[in-house]
Image 1 (cartoon, rainbow, N blue to C red):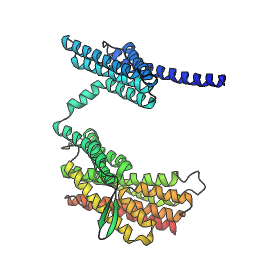
Image 2 (tube, rainbow, N blue to C red; image 1 turned 90 degrees about the vertical axis):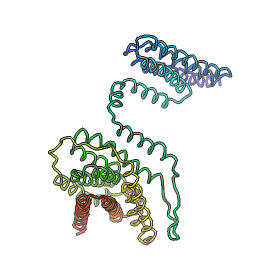
Image 3 (cartoon, one colour; image 1 turned 180 degrees about the vertical axis):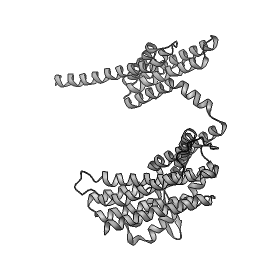
Image 4 (tube, rainbow, N blue to C red; image 1 turned 120 degrees about the vertical axis):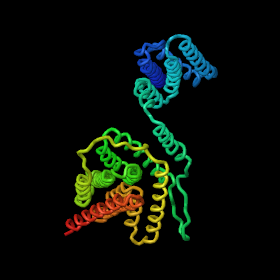
Length: 430
């Protein structure tokens, strides 16, 4: 019994010592940049502050007086920070730098407390992010100072969309339409609005740097995340620069190529190494969509031109909200179609799911195929239906543009993608 007790005590001791050592190390890590910048508080001070936070937190866990010590330690760190800030104001040093050092000291104290309380990952994350903010001081200042009023406004609007409105929305609601109960997910719909705005901001930065070629980058890599959201970004892009509609059409085609490539990777990758055969049936039709999309995109715009292409703003709040409203209408009609044509079961579900995420429908088909509920032909058809649904919904959304040439080109080339995929499927069957 004594030996067991010693082992338990030893394990507890080792755990405690490791946490104290980690707190000190993270404090040194935080103080490294301050030491390099030759500030009044450096590696030793920050390490001692983190150790103080760790020790007082352990006292708070084990004793009754520990909580008071923990609060007292925090107050002492705050007082020291205020004194440093006041010293910066009275001396020739930059008061902002002294204030940064003061706040960093309080962060170091909090990191020590987090680690001692057992929140290891959280403590390490705070330390790493804080050190990154200190190191990137010049880059962050240049970025902030370089923002125009319109860019600052767009950034604030995006923050409201993503971090204020989205968490307030319910996860699910039931909509009554013609006596039918349709389950809807407001957070998913709003997430599409956020995706349109987010891709728009990334597109703005890339296009400002690389011109027309940047639109291709936005189309393909944005398509990997949400090919439908790329359409919303391109609608906004065309409304700002109608003469660049050929690039926007190519971006939508590349988004379709990325979407098909993602679905193909899921279909093949997740069926390898299992008991079922690899879903090779999906390679030819999806491969045809990818090849045709790249070929047409290469011909629709002059990619040799990479001159500056100024946009008015990163994204338009009005256009993003309008896109969300259109997406909601499409989603409702998709749900109604699934309800009305319930006899075709999973295929109708795949079509309706493709309105939101063809990747979700593809994953569901692969899971059912691996479980034996679907055969290879049925799984392939479901994946193709979801892919077709995604292409069609992008065409419908693009048709809301006031630019006739843009919407006509999207419709024609999207039809070409569908025709190519259908012919490839027929050739495989024959």
